[in-house]
Length: 100
Image (cartoon, rainbow, N blue to C red):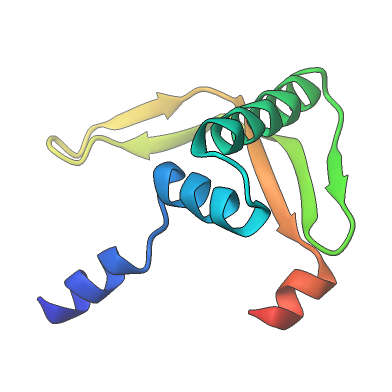
């Protein structure tokens, strides 16, 4: 149980990210929230149009196609068909990878 508690503490949510950005940049939380929302919207629109977003040193956001496949209903064990779909993907850059 202590492992679960320590795991939960290691997750940063949006509000904590906004507070950290506001503190580091010396801006209000409202301004930091607008910045984060703008970033998310820009990345979403770019990915939706089929393009990539590359932040040198941080990583690349892209879209890949996941093929249709068979899965199993965990309650009944019955085989179900899972449709093909597009999924967002993030690949960490070298600089980020080396810092982790």
